[in-house]
Image (cartoon, rainbow, N blue to C red; front, side, top):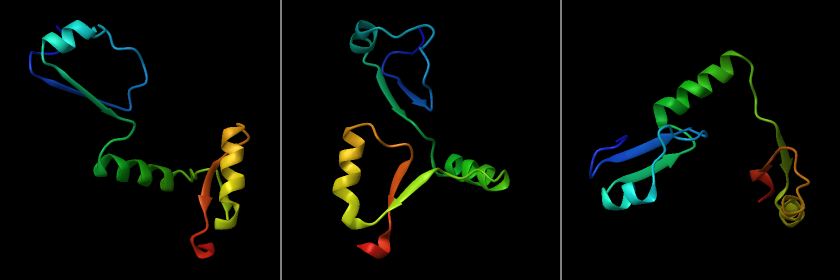
Length: 92
């Protein structure tokens, strides 16, 4: 199989189907562990940050004051958010 008995598979940044797929039975009865993360560790994160800095890639954010948190949350709930909200720490 894809994974040995009592083994752990860690998926990092994988958003596609597994091939071959893991089935519930093979995971449970094989005592297999499956874990994952959308990002890598410190080294991978630093490499990505360096790449972005070198190529002028910046996040698209909307800066809000602490007093706008409730309004921002309402916008999240109504899917009216184009960028990531960042709270201005000086307004806290």
